Image 1 (cartoon, rainbow, N blue to C red):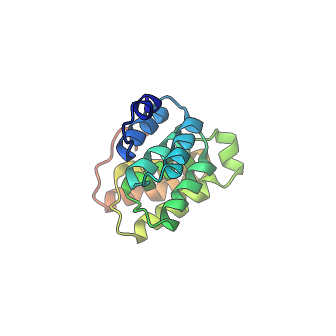
Image 2 (image 1 turned 90 degrees about the vertical axis):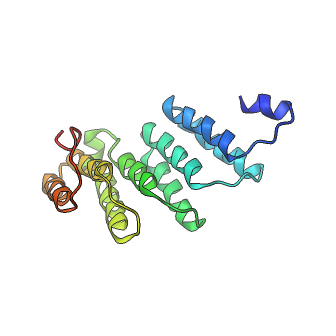
Length: 166
């Protein structure tokens, strides 16, 4: 799609790239999403929050939690605003591995560190953010931490959904 635009002398912007990166996320094509993000940088197209969120989400769906966290950290280093979606996708990426890998790995700890960053930032907590952190703790066998997060949802006056109770 993008090559057709380029061949026909259309000037590509972040909206074009983001649409295709989002499609890559939905198709579980995280490597292509990263390639598109690199192409944006080479073409001097500005990387914004929405584009980086889509790329983090593509990595999350591809079970590439380390890459998702690397991109999330780059957002902070490059002064790209991180929002609720940014934190949610990064936390969710930490819980996307298989149960055995997460229980011995540091994914659940990274999820909690990110969750703590959300709490100390200006970003609004959502039920989906809690759900992602609870899921990472559950997969890591950290049921007490998951239970604590579950209790915090009520104190934050957020509405629980069917995912919260799974």
